[in-house]
View 1 (tube, helix red, strand yellow):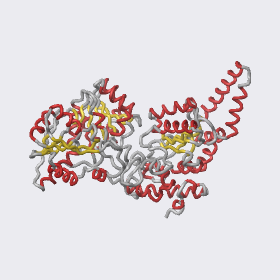
View 2 (cartoon, one colour):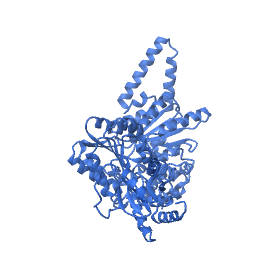
View 3 (cartoon, one colour):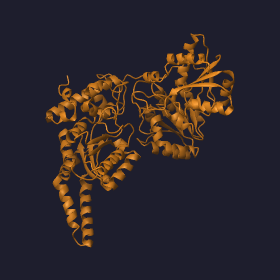
Length: 624
């Protein structure tokens, strides 16, 4: 039983604990995180790595008046547990339960709805400036990981922070680097000095004193002082880049030493100007399977705590990775790029087989797409494996550096449609809408594993312009037969002839359409079923024939209805002046909360029985 954790209902309760009790609390929090994530899935390794950091921040700073902003937000589980949500933590990532990311609707301690990387520094700076404008005096602390710091927008934020000289604290959570023993003691000793009030007051007083000397002498003595300080720090401090950007740099510190971090935060919280605190943590801390393989346990499905075995079934991502290996074995021009999503995109084996043809750019989507452009310009065949939600971050590069220049880049868009438990910031429900308006691009969507393989082989073989294949997260629908026609450019398939009405699906929705057709046949209704295959271009020949044969068309897709695949068919039939009746089934134009895929699809009327019922009701309506 968690004896101490059960007493923690707010950060104020932390401040009543002794050092030993804090250490026990950290262990109890880790046990709770492991227990819940093993059942629900989630981001395990990042959260286990920041427990002591989270406790230290809430211990020293007066939250929520002082504001902690979590970049990405996938490391906020301990934060949720100690800010009044302990009793609800078992609902993590479940429909109607706690989000796996900070959510303002959940708590006043959640300052910003995080989900994507690199944004928190700029957001935090905006809060600081607004507070200054309104004469508020609360500290703003941004926690950002070393992976997120590589994001271009994070550097934009750092650059502007340094120029404005506002009072902001950036905590750099570094869980990749290590501190050599020879440097550790000296670094700690130096930073105990430079974080002290006496040191900082002395530095300011000396600087001001030098200003009273004659102008020429002031300039020279100050320059000497800066060179002396920089020289000392270059010997003893791991990084000067932050000081050059205008930050006071402190660290690195042991991110699992609660007492040390409390001491550091107490020392710096009254220092003015931009501050960067560099801490070293270990991803997966406290659970040896996650410590040994933090990449796999970064974002993980349910698993067995005792064995570390992950309870996952093969899905589109694993099919993608396996197929790409076979393609690369045939075609030496194929290279693969991913912005920090190697495991999630199913590319571990590809990375091992072709290390010289695999490029993980880190969380830098804009760079990844520009990099792909350069590879394509030089005669290679770049395949960019990227999640639907993260492709929006590189949209400018996609539009102007790939599509405008008509470059042969293949986008493998994973997590298209309802992602599920990660919620609003990760649902891939907009990509059909934002892709189909672009010139030069070809867009496909497979209904199953076999079709994904065919599309990948076909796309690489015919890669002469931008192409995209979108597919959902999770297990695939095993095809009943592999005898469907080979892929042909812009051509769909009439899966089943019918009478009076026709169900048109794109991607995974074709499976739903087939099951709905089976349900309707029980009622004596025999619909046609179409697998569109291509979102762009449309199979005009097929859809002209369908428009003439069938009275009513029902279009199924896992994308917002606004600008989606159904919209393209409405536009097509309007332009051709074919008076066909159309009803679309898809997702509303709203940000969709977290929950398992089936629950979310049912909520928005995309369950098989719900669709069959709605279709029966529709065809009885005189308007149809």
